[in-house]
Amino acid sequence: MGKIIGTNLTKTYGKQTVLDHVDLTLETGKIYGLIGRNGAGKTTLLSLLTAQNPATEGTVTIDGEPVWENEKVLSQICYSREISPVTTFGPNNMKVSDYLNIAATFFPNWDKTYAKELISLFDLDVKKKLSKLSKGMLSAVTIVVAMASKSPITILDEPVAGLDVVARENFYRLVIDEYAATNRTFIISTHIIEEAASLFEDVVILDQGKIFLEENTEELLSRAFRISGDSEAVDNAVIGKKVYHPEMIGRNKAVTVLLNKGEEANFSSDLSVEPVNLQNLFYAISVDAEKGVLA
Image (tube, rainbow, N blue to C red; front, side, top):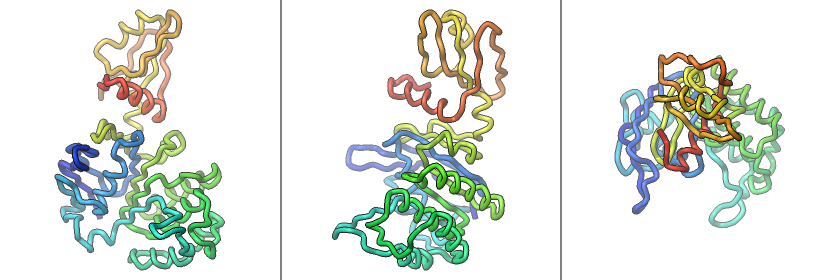
């Protein structure tokens, strides 16, 4: 388990369309990065893939079996997301230990020994109430659940929110080690793109409820460049190419270019040509999306 296929996924709330006819295929045994601006539909998409939320239209299957109301399939998925320190009735007074014990009952592959190791790694006080934890410690609890679940499909929504740099690096190392050891499928939604980019074998960029791009991360970045130099020379060099976020710097111009697959990067030596990392590419694409000029 297993290939995830989302077909024609649409989610509307009244007149608002949050997810707009999305088709998505996620292969087994990969680490996926799901990125997009706030409101792009990332959490909605994840909630549909894991049957936390019914789709207005469309279907989700894993290895050909529907996800919705399918306990057999759902038992193999862990969807770990932010824990609220408060409830409808006031502070969330459940102890961390109790929360983890309850979580363990939901996952047939739960690894109690691994959970203890993770608790120690993140220096979690299991006697504390959830309402008394910092945002970073709440994130640490979600990471313990996700990793110790040993679920073949493990989804983490903003897992490092509030964590300091040491804890974040510990998390990234954990994912890499666990992936290498078990070949679990990980889907990670995050705004901290630059740090996490090296994890992502494939990246899915969501924009305004639609998938803008889904591709192998290394192949994608091999086609992305920042071109700068004389304004006219830059314009001539990028004719017919996908160009994002043009900037004028005096008489010079800088643009981000995404070449077509198979296209070679043959640019004039008079121009400055630099590779672009995933965060900068996403920024350039997002800025143009704001202006309504997305290619």
